[in-house]
Length: 598
Image: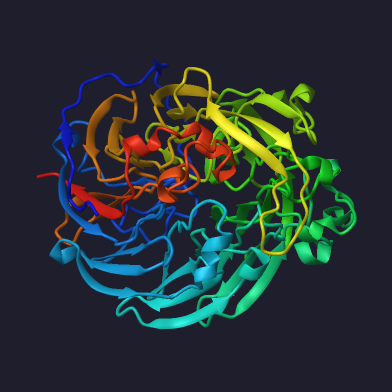
């Protein structure tokens, strides 16, 4: 295990942005940016309810970030994909590892010395039903508790002071293919989280658990009758096609909704003023769409719900009758933006299908949808009806291989979260440049076993680079600048008040770039590839710090984390075909790195 080993590159002056646009003119500052001064903590994986992932700390800035140095590091002892964001509460950092989901408490007054660790001992069999590595995306702090999910579909609450388990609640069943990998959030005393398992024929759901005692308060399914989806008289979707009784049943073949997917494994946002949570739903199952004619509601979409009782207020499908595994679980970034001369409460989402959406988050109306990656699977967007315009020539069918499908199944962007800066009015997006060939094959449902129905091979998109890191202006509806990466940009992004943006690469570089131009300002070589989420915090000494975990893996890094044979290009649901050279760029790993100025 590499711990504290790296090569820093200070004062990098190479221009890494491939394209630049004029700097955005001043626009109305979003309400989400007008908040109390940053307290220097990081209490949930997304930093805030709006999923902005913006740090208001500015000691580290574009002028001095070249001097950043490694302060300390900590080996987790686990060698699978590290996707979690660390938490910082007072003088303690908390970090959740991939399976076996160890929770570490590290002393920030003593250069990361271990205070305690908690081992939940999830069932070993859960590893066998994890589609895309045994990852965990982080925890949440709430009233003296650290709360997170374990791979075997349990939620645990731990005393933040001493690591003592306070409660543990079983939410899913690994024998049905259910796991849990997402980072929960807490809204008004309820912990919100959902299941994974869309490739195992699970039925997706989101649940609310009482933070005080671990009892389940409500559960809403993504498919099935209105009573199960928690659709009632308050449900008022914007588009007429989404209105009607029990559409979560009638948009499927008989009883297929029971194994239809729509798992809720991504990010949840919350608007306190509207008192609404927003969460995406995953792909319908199986991938072979011939088996499931219909719109397959409410998969590959987004819900707005009342957090008190889970009642649905509106819903929208990004990809009705999804053909390409375009899960709708990416982060929903909540902003107040000037749209056509009027400030609107919007939800901004870089979606897996390759479009950057701006929705009215009060109603679910699509205000804009623009391509941010190369797309062949659709030919445009019908704004009047809020629908993708399908490319009929790219429809996969049983027994026929359809080629040049872009973006590939991981989408223009997968789970790895973007970051918004209220200073630059730009959204910073780590994303992919991948295409695929896909053939529909027969699929038979057996509980707890893969239910995919497709043979896939992925490869680089146009230009040969497999990743990109872009700054997007949602008002001008265009890229401001962009940086090409050799491998998929699979880490999260962090924007700061110092006008610096941080992200990591799968070939072991942790980078700082100028938020306004994309110029590379600094980089550090870690021990393993980076797929984690960077954070910024104020230490007990008053200094600003930056933290990131390395440890390659996840779906993109499965060839390394799982030791897969590069000769099988269809392995890892086709991702190995695009990543055959990754083992030459990185080994397994798992460590936390913390940086500061001298």
